[in-house]
Structure formats: C-alpha cells, structure tokens
Length: 67
Image (cartoon, rainbow, N blue to C red; front, side, top):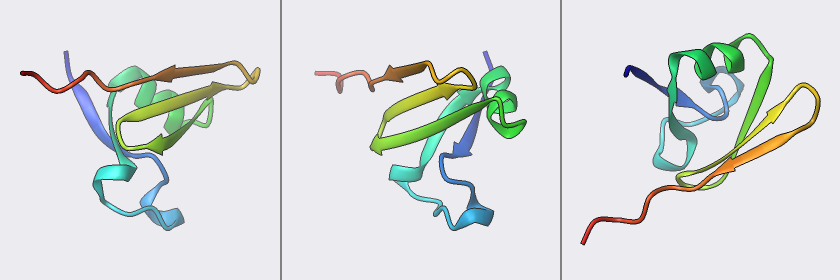
C-alpha cells in the first residue's frame, strides 16, 4: 500500500518539515485532508487525531519501538 508523507499543518500555513509535523497518510486520507473533508492534529509526534466534517474524532497512536 502506498502512503504520502504529509505536513499536519500545511507548509504554506507555516507548518515546518519536522518530525512533529509530518505524518504518513494513505492516499485516500491524504486526499480527504487536502479537499477539506478531514482535519488532522498531531498533539505529540506520531499521535494523530482526525476530525470529520460532522465533528467525530479518531485518534491513532504510534506503535511502540521494537525490542
């Protein structure tokens, strides 16, 4: 499956190309964000909260590091 590295806060809105502002989104979710249907926040590096147009939120956390 392909994914896109995306700025959580868009670069043209002052977002930086940094660890705490980048996320790997699948193409479908990247398009939904780009088209304004979904909004993403990254409260800490690797944790994403997606909010739909209806206000429903979904949070994903990064996998723990391998041992």
